[in-house]
Image (cartoon, rainbow, N blue to C red; front, side):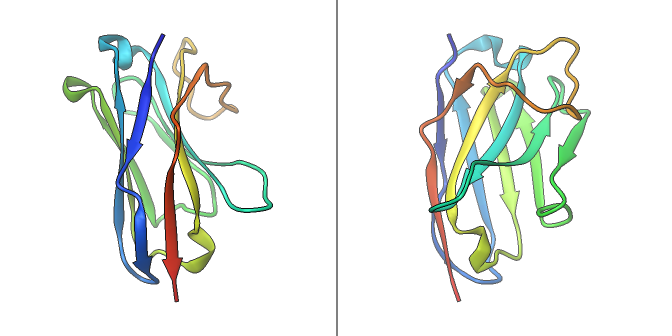
Length: 125
């Protein structure tokens, strides 16, 4: 079982940047595709980005492409989501998730086995 813990959320102003972290409890972290999602009040959970085992493949939702960057450091069992030029519409709880799919296809819809507890991001205008 993989435990995921997100951190790095907070209150920022529009135009600011934040970097979220997703720390995993297991050394097998490198065997999982990591996805980032968010859920705003009253809305469904939204896929944002995914990264393959080695980090060589990434995939983004159109809504964040060009503003958000996903990365990972397998030596630290940690994934990251760099968020730039934040907008009020980015206000949500952000989650990371681990999908043990093989091969590590980042294009298809993720079906994560493990989820973090989420971290709140609030963007004020």
